[in-house]
Amino acid sequence: MSAGWLVVFAKRPQPGLVKTRLCPPLTPEQAAELYRCLLADALDESARAARALALAPVLAVDPPEACAELAASAPPGFRSLAQRGRDLGARMTRVAREAAAAGASCVLLRGSDSPALAEATLRQAVHALAGADVALSPDRDGGYGLVALGARALLRGLGSPALFDHPMSTASVLADTIQNATRLGLRVAQVVPGFDIDRFEDLRWLAAARHETATPPCPRTLALLDAHGLWPPAAAAREASSSCCAPGRQEP
Figure (cartoon, rainbow, N blue to C red):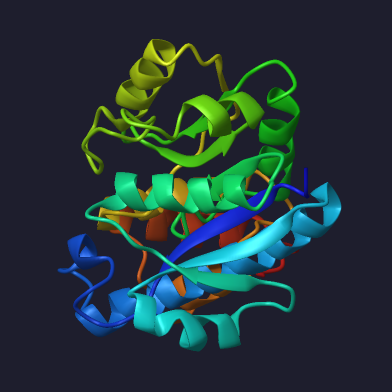
């Protein structure tokens, strides 16, 4: 067995092709820049976690021709591979199969739009695999931002039918994955939940999360939202109130 893989699923930050549900009120250019920051923050945090957890960092890229472009902007140590498959579930299965074929002891698959997904959650998922085959970090929208696969999941969950053979981007993704895992005889654990940024209103969760820790794991994303005033009205009011009431607080 080789080291486990920590895989970040990423897209080229191209206006009109990423974070389209944020538009409006964001313009396609603003949405693409926001995604660029989300991705950069996710890669930095994942690089730190990979070192701490002795995992091999991998960047799974869509579209395939953007592999060299995104790899050039990733932290040192990342290898890149192309996402291939008819949908996200098929692409996740394919990447996990590549990891299993390479002898990986476990595989962690994470998205690039979960700004509060920190090393502590990744560590918790790895530890959960001591007693489970699949560990999931649920999102608030019924999905999940992280799935960890242990040895039995890599052996039994990637055939046909596979663990991820169900529709993605729905409100039942978490439940569907758990149901498939149960049918495959895999033990499932859930770790600390998080959130991703799909809609403009989702930014309110990030506004709340930044005050829960002294060092939020997404400094570029926060700086962009602050500099351009891209917060939803309720979140913007919270930020203004926090700044007035806590003069000693330093922005990332």
